[in-house]
Amino acid sequence: MPASYFLGTRLLGSTIAYHKWSDTEKMPDSEALFCPECGEIWGRILESLSCNWHVTIRSCAQHPRYPGEDAAGSFIAPWRKAFEELPPEVLRYETQLRLDRIQNEQS
Image 1 (tube, rainbow, N blue to C red):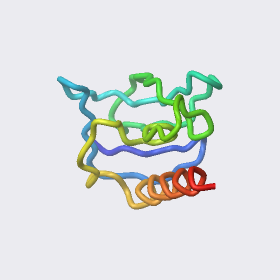
Image 2: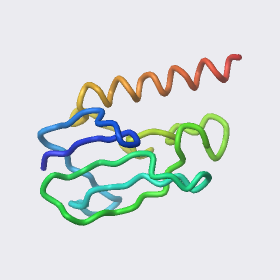
Image 3: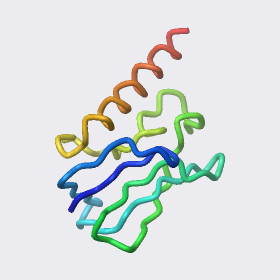
């Protein structure tokens, strides 16, 4: 299923094939990433063939729940091990997110 990734309202990139999986089953719905601290939907993964939405609680980059949290502000679920389906723009965002986090921890 084709998918588009949005950071806020800005399109980061799109991919031809994206298959989201929960722990046990495929999730065909679009996904909204909700920060429990500020209440914002900071990210969206729009499945082009789906009209349903699934809300995932995941902290935005400004509100990690604990120091060094890898999932804060990330489109990548903490349990995922493969990222080949992500578009290059999303991979650049994810890399910069982690570099910024490391730099802030060293400051």
